[in-house]
Length: 423
Image (cartoon, rainbow, N blue to C red):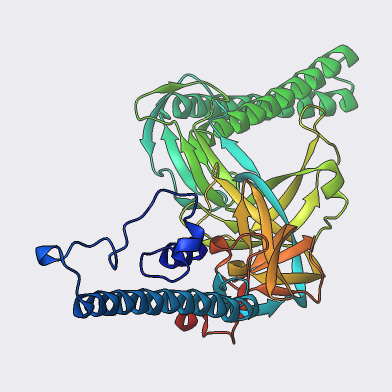
């Protein structure tokens, strides 16, 4: 602006222009140097020139003053807006959130375990005689049977013939005994009358005893043959459910060969594997709940604990009795929990717990900002998660939406249930 005013001051027609241009190149003066028409200078011409010069100088000065006033206005406006900008908030809230507090309550303390469903006891059923053919099979896998129920029949013709022969031999032995007994009585009478020697009496008594022994032997043989005949009927040794059947009609079986296997009493048990340290917390009579593969759940009761620990796996077995009418089947793998009792728990809603990089986190309110804290979680119940460590019991925790927050974010706290509308 200063250089512009200097230029105006030096413009021709300014009374001080001549003083500043003494040493500079001469500038033509319109008042003296402007040639007039016809080579003569008149007073009216000078007056017109001076008037035009004054108007030009005044216009330039007015423009300069206007520009100067505009610059000062801009500076004052900038100065007035600076305090307003300083007083504005530092940032905008990242999210509107509702806060919750951890709750304390008694939760059931459960011990998780895996194991196999097995038969309480199994009984193998087979023939007690061999070399006979199966003529009939009366049961199949899954059938419930009672003690003594007929399961299969073996060919009995040979054994029946042996029984008939033994009976005939018994009749013969009994007849021989009667004859020997009569002879012995006769010799006793003759000996008393002095008409027989002592040797003859001894021989008759010996024949009688021998005949009596033969009779007893034939009776025992008949009983054995009748027992063999009874063994041609394969019967159940106890109440239960047939789990395996290998008997086939027409097959020749051997003594002791397994034809059927049954689950005694239809009782099943869950053999849960737990560590040695956990076994000390389990007691007989505790309740257990199994989750079967079909989604159903079965409740049982701990019957007994194994007295030993497997040296390879360092695990022990807990035997849990299961009800008969459950959907559990022998050989089924099942997961379950053993109820150890109740224990206090500090819990949060599941929506307040965030999983990042394999760890659990929660966002805690710190003033108007949130702070991310690492927590350890334990049991779950319905829609809540137990917090084992890392969280103050009185801390205000972001109820939901933690996935959209970062550590140190500015938030706006709203009543529960209105955070969606606020966002």
